Every structure is written in C-alpha cells, then in structure tokens.
Picture 1 (spheres, one colour):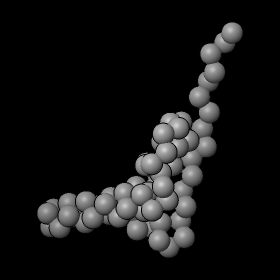
Picture 2 (cartoon, rainbow, N blue to C red):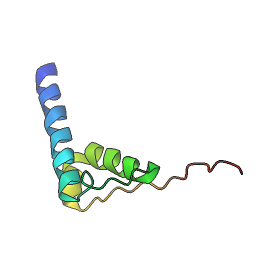
Picture 3 (cartoon, rainbow, N blue to C red):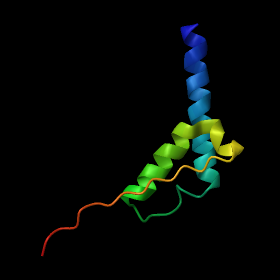
Picture 4 (tube, rainbow, N blue to C red):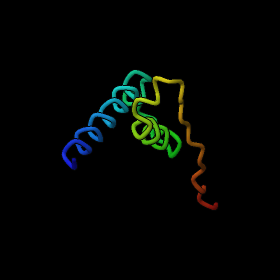
Length: 66
C-alpha cells in the first residue's frame, strides 16, 4: 500500500512539473518570491492545474532601508 501511495505522489508531482513547464515558469530568469511561490504551488497542485486551478502566490520581500 505504501508503495502505491509513493508512486501516486511522484506521478502527482511530475504532472505538476509538466503543468509549470507548459505555463513557461522555468524559462524566465527573473527570480522573485512570487515567481518561486507560483512554481511551488503549481507543482503541488499537480493534476488540479488541468481542471482550472491556477494557483498564484502574492508576496513582498522587505526592501532594505536607505
């Protein structure tokens, strides 16, 4: 049973990685908190991406004081 769950978890994450690639998340070099969050949320959402889920993360990194 544990092996089946492990295989299902890997397949779930692979589908999420494919969805992220189709959305073009990996080709852009502008790294930001929101971009990283979008990638993680998309991978974790897995097959749900193909049912209309489009996870987005909004975050702000504190700017250094001047």
